[in-house]
View 1 (cartoon, rainbow, N blue to C red):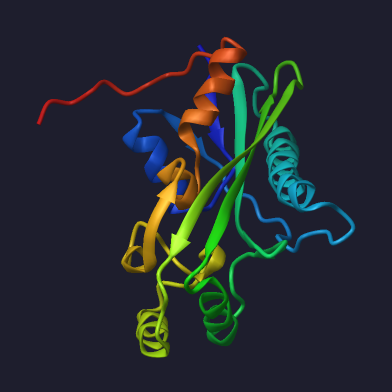
View 2: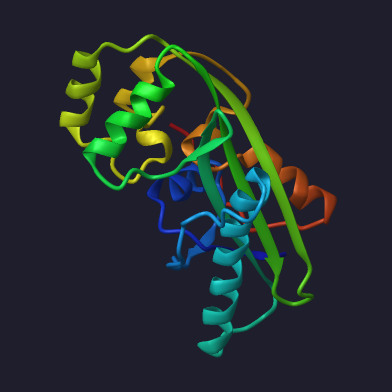
Length: 205
């Protein structure tokens, strides 16, 4: 039975794992999330997720912690449109530019996940893509949304699980991938590698 280490400071990813019943060790790490422009679009997203996982591995082992039976999970989510990557906006001005760019169009939300088995050093990676269609947004809608502050720390400057849902006309793919963690894809990797994890008992409401 393996134990999961979540190498993320995202409360949204923690919530997804909690709701799915997984027990895990929160282990946030801090690495640069500036994409490497020398890499392809997919490589840029995957590179950040891999750097997070490797940073968590290094810090975990530096603290003298056990290798077995732990598996590190890291992830990075970005919004892609016109072969451009829209990460977390640096300020309100950039957030407004992102929303204007997404208005009335389809974009892709891509989440790269990386798994490292600390006992064997085996690594697994995957990129999940969800298509999202935005409604046409008025300048008033954009400014009202920015005033809520929800755009901060959100790839593409919106949160589909929050007030940003009003902008979404439809989506095709995994909803939680847009939130930040494509759990079905991750569970396929678990199953592929025969990695079984501790889960919380289901509570009756």
